[in-house]
Length: 444
Ligand code: CMC
Image 1 (cartoon, rainbow, N blue to C red):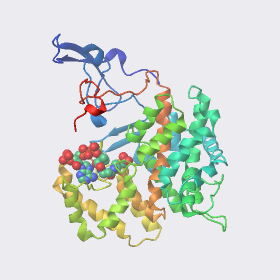
Image 2: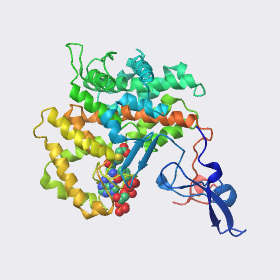
Image 3: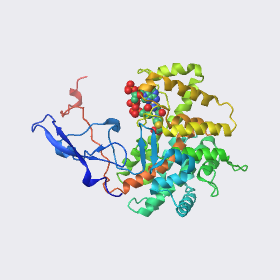
Image 4: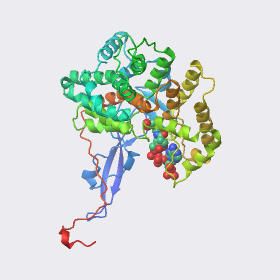
């Protein structure tokens, strides 16, 4: 971490806090910090010690939990930048491994640096042979996300030589191991679920090609990776690589703030990503489209999505930060049409249904007023499906991609001298102190 904001040049916000206790109002001057982009940030670190008051912000809608130089989002304009580079340009011109390097190392790699990184990732793709036994402890019908949460957590039991988070070299090896092994672990989860033998990675294949190869090849015959599918997968991995302080990334940072090892932290991130409000949405979108089934039933489902008493939500719509089109969805929408055409799909009913649903929702006053636009998950499921990827693997592939971002954020956090254990407080609304009543004296 370099200098902390514009230390000598900050504005001050003057606050008079009246907690309603003896002593009356307590004035405090809080610094207003300015990042390189984005809204000003009120630094409330002194608030409690100066005024005896906490802040209350469930869901962290007004809270910056850390300083970061990795990803910038302007939710109103629909902008997403990684280290300053627009996501559209990265998706069009870069590769997933180059983006992973960019996230971790602050800048795009030189040719030599990329050769080194690519080589290191390629040489770490195999997993410890004994890890294979771990899979057989799971039921065959286990969700692959359940399997990878367990297996990634178990990596810390296999790679003892990269657990010391205070050693920069060990941090680097653990980071490369995680990025390299995620496709292998993911593909093994799929192979296990369908009862096929695990397939070893091939060093002459790219990152995305290897992932496809390990999922779909069998030892019985040669398998050639379709370059259209590999290119599309690489683009999807780029689009999912990082997204600022989202729920799973914040989980990784929170776990990491305790000094937990990186394998445990990434396992925590995977668990968090699984939820349907987060990475699980891509699977939920396909299930929803299948349920809707026909464009004649769209209005029925929109009505349900708008009904406060119905828990149904339009999956793949809405975002905490974007109040405009999610730029990743724009790229994916186009990619989806291109890939389907390249793969020879003349007519893909789910895509047609999705586009009709999108059109109707975007014209609906409820969605307009609440600024609910399609997010990245709205189209990723359709493209995955066209590529022949089973629905239960959608969120797993999201986890493979997001590992690059999680790692970059974890590394940034460990290197931040102002880093502390994450320890939020609460607004307590339970009982005040009372005395224990013996069992025989308790009233029903
Ligand atoms: N369908 C219907 N209504 C919605 C939807 C939706 N998809 N999303 C938000 N709303 C309504 C919500 O009911 C609320 O209404 P009101 O103000 O009347 O109470 C309002 O819009 C604001 O929603 P919120 O839940 O307060 O917003 P949030 O920022 O807490 O939630 C979200 C964001 C992404 C969890 C939510 O939009 C959602 O559940 N979307 C569907 C799931 C989804 O697609 N998730 C993927 C997110 S992008 C990828 C990722 O993060 O992994």
